[in-house]
Length: 398
Image (cartoon, rainbow, N blue to C red; front, side):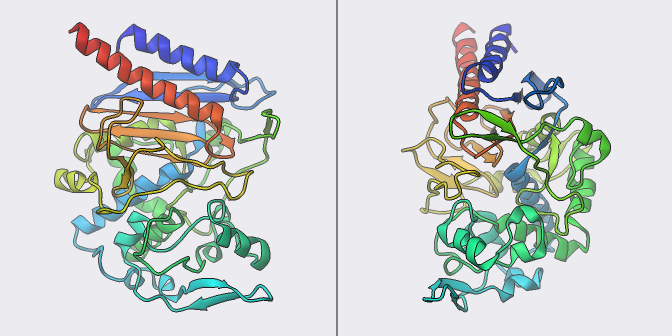
C-alpha cells in the first residue's frame, strides 16, 4: 500500500481520538485478497488508563457476528442439511411457538395471534421474519419496560422468545433473526454455535482469538466499553456480555480481534477460500453476495433507546438491499465503495465493508455506546473514503 494512504489513515485514527468529541481508542485495518495492507491503532483501551489500544486488542464485535452465523448456515445448505424455505421450526422447534403482537389492551396486556405463515431460515437471513430489537422498535421497548422481556444481551433463551412484530415475510426489519438462525444451526449440527464456528470456520481461516466466552488472555487485551454522555464526554462502562452465556447468540455474541475478522473478510474476497481450507464453495459466495430482497429495500434504524442507539443509516438517500447476510449498496457510495459491495456494523460502533469487485475490505472498531456515534462513524467514513481516493490516485498515476 502506498505510504500516502498509510500516513493518511494514521492521521485519521489519531485525529478521531484527539479531536473533540473524540473516541477513547480505535483499531482499523484494510486487506486485499492476500493480506492486510494497512493495520493501525490509536488511543487507549480505556479512558483514564495507561493501556494503549493495539492492533491485537479484543473487542465485543456485536452484529458483525451475524455474517459468521450466516456463513455457518450456508455451509449446511451446501451439505443438503438445511432447506432455506422449510419451516425453521423443523430445526429450532421453539420458533414455532411465537405469535404476532397486534398491540396492547387497556391494562397493558399484549394482544397476540397466530402468524399467517411459518418462519423460514431464508427470512431469518434476510431480516424479514418479523423480529426487531428493543433499541430500534417501540413495541419491543414497551415489552421490555412493562412486561419484563429480557434484552438480547442477556444471552438467554427467554430473550429469544419475543412475539413477532408482524406476519413473517411482510417487510424488512432489523432484529434478532440471526440469533434464531444460530439456533437453527445448533439444531441441525447438535453442537453449540461456538463449536460449529471453531471447527468449520475459524480453524480453516486461521482465526485464533474469536469466541463467545472470554478467556483470561483475551480479557487482558479487552477494549473497555464507553458511554457517550449528553454533553459529548465519554465515560467507561462496567459492561461485559455474559461470561458463560446460556445461548451463543448468532446475532451479536462474539468477542474477537480486528485481525481475525480480516481473515473472515478475506475468505469472502477469495470465493470462500481460507488460509487452511475452503469454507464456502465459490458458487455459494457468488449467490450469497447478491441482493436477496427482490424489490424491497432496507430502511433507516430509529434510535428508540438513546443510551444504546442514535438514529442510524448508511448512505442516506441511496438505495440499499440485503444479501446473506450483509447490506448491499445498490449504487456507488459517497466513500467510493462500488455498487454491489457488502458491509454492516456492530452496536458499539464497529463498521466493515467487503468489496469483492475490487478485492478489498476494511474494518473499523471502537467500543462506544450509543450506536451511530458521530465521532466514530465520521472517522470510519473518512477512513474508507481515503482508501478509495488512494486507489483512484494510484490508478490515475499508473
